[in-house]
Amino acid sequence: MAEVGRPGGALVTSPGKQHTLELAERYVCGDRVRFLTGAGIDLVIGRRQGYHIWDVDGRELIDIHLNGGVYNLGHRNPDVIASLSTALETLDIGNHHFPSTERAALAERLIGVTPGAHYAVFASGGGEAIDVAIKSARRATGRRRVVSVVDAYHGHTGLALAAGDEQAANAFLATEPDFVRVAFNDIDALDAALAEPAAAVILETVPATAGFPRPDPEYLPAVRQFCDQTGALYIADEVQTGLGRSGQMWAVDHFGVVPDILVTGKGLSGGIYPIAATLLSERAGAWIESDGWSHVSTFGGAELGCRVAATVLDLTEQAMPGLPIQQWTEAFARLQQKHPDWVVEVRQTGLIIGVKFAHEVGGMLMTKLLFDNGVWAMFAGFDRSVLQVKPGLLMGQADIDAVMAAFDRACAAAVAL
Ligand SMILES: Cc1ncc(COP(=O)(O)O)c(C=O)c1O
Image 1 (tube, rainbow, N blue to C red):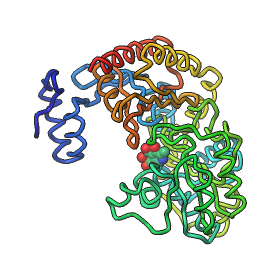
Image 2 (cartoon, rainbow, N blue to C red; image 1 turned 45 degrees about the vertical axis):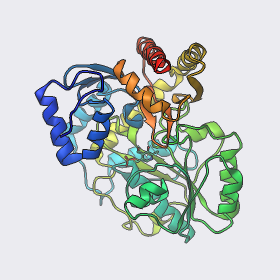
Image 3 (tube, rainbow, N blue to C red; image 1 turned 30 degrees about the vertical axis):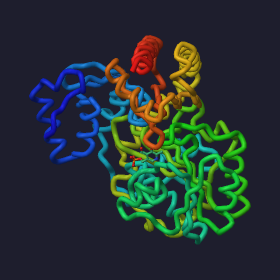
C-alpha cells in the first residue's frame, strides 16, 4: 500500500496496525483507507470506554463524533452491556414471524414517546428503516413521487439511497425519476415540488451531512401544512437527531410538528446491538392491519436488540433533564470570541452542533488538527467548511474542558497556517 502516516508526523510504527491498514485497504475499503491515511488520520480503534477511544497503538482520543450518535450514552456503557448480558441468559434473536414479548414491549415504549405514532416496524439499520418509511408512504397514498432535500443523507439501501444526495445515488445507478430534491429551508421550492402529487416529503430535522443547518422557525410547520394540503406524508429522519440529543426526545418536538412517520436508529442500539425502527401513524401503517407479511425482516427487532433499546430509552430519559447543553453553548461562545476570524458560525440545537470555519475546507482541516490534539470529530460531508460536533449525553465537565482546550489549540494552529 501507499505510505501510511501523517504528513510532517510520525509514520505508523506498530506492525500490527500496519497489517490491519494493509488488510483493510486490500479487502474492505481501499479508497477510504487511502483518503484517511493520506490526510494523516491513521486511526485504528482498539480500546474504547465512555467517551474515550484508543488507537490500537495506545493513543487516546475523546470522541465527539460518536458515529452519528451511536454512542450517545458512551462506548460500552455498563448499563447497556448489563442489559445485553442479562438478555443473553434467556433470549436470542427471536423469530420474526411470531409475536414477541420483547418487540411488543419496545414498540409500546417507542410509540409512547412519539406523538402521532401508532405502529412500530423494526429494522437492523437506519437505511432499512428509511426504506420501510418510503414504502409505507407509497402504499398509503398510492403515489410514487418522493420529495427530499438537496445534500441529504438517509443511508445506502435502495430507497434511502435514491432519496439522498443525487451524486451518491448516481454512483450506484440508483437515481430514480420519482425522486425530486429541493433546497432545505426553501418553502417556495417545496410548495412548487408538491404541485404534483407526492407520496412523501422526507427530511432530517437538522440535516447532519449538510452541517446541521437549523430549520427556520416557519419551515417545518410549512412542511406539515403542505403535506396536509396535498395528501403527502411527512417522514422525519431522526436517525442522528433523535433520542434526546436535541434536548427533546425527537428534534421535531422543538418545532411543534408531528410527522406521519419518524425513523430512529443509531443510538437506539446503545452502540452494542444493531436495531432501528420506523414509527408510523395509523394512516401510514394501515397495511400492517391488512397485509401483515408484506414486509418482514429476519433481524429487524431482534429480541436481544429490543432489550438493549429499552435500556437505552431508560437511560436517555434519565439523562435528558441534566444534558450539558448550556456548557457547550458557553464554551463555543468563548471559543468564537477568542478566534473570531476563524470560527464564523456555531449552529446549535441542544447537543447537535455545527461549527463553520472561515475556509471552504475549514471543517476538514479541523478534523485533522483536532485529531492531532486528541479529539475525534468529523467534518460535514456536504459542506466541508463545517465540523459536526455531537457530544455525548452523559459527558462530564472534565471531558468538555479537555475538548475545548483541544479546539483552542487546533484553532490557533489553523489560523497560523
Ligand atoms: C440521518 C441518517 N439517516 C439514515 C442513516 C442510515 O443509517 P444506517 O447507516 O444505520 O443504515 C444515517 C447514517 O449515517 C443517517 O445519518
